[in-house]
Length: 181
Image (tube, rainbow, N blue to C red):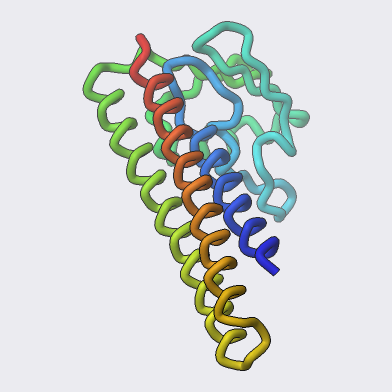
């Protein structure tokens, strides 16, 4: 019965990890392009679906579209995004150079990481509340005893504590990654 709530907590962790992968830490990471979309024959597609993305150097991304007509579309998507970088194109490839992060920018990113982590903790706590509400309903309907209710509430709390600790660990890891010069 509790496995459905544990899987929801696990999905929250996966979502947080995906969000964190989009935050750049001074070096080039193809995942920062995951949220950018371009129009490809009337279909909204991710850059990875229409181009090859490579990391030739630590702070450089190279995007090689499968069709040259996409260069302008991809460039436009990068320009209007909040990545804070300017793409350069050589006619065949789009090259993005990531500047070294300033101390101020690192602090902003670390605040953003903490904010996203707090949102994940709230989501986990909401899942705990839903699980406890479901257990109380089952108890009222005489489907489980008082003892089973208490035991299951304890299990839910232990699960919650585990996932909250995982979120804290993820926040610490990403913050260290960002703050490391």
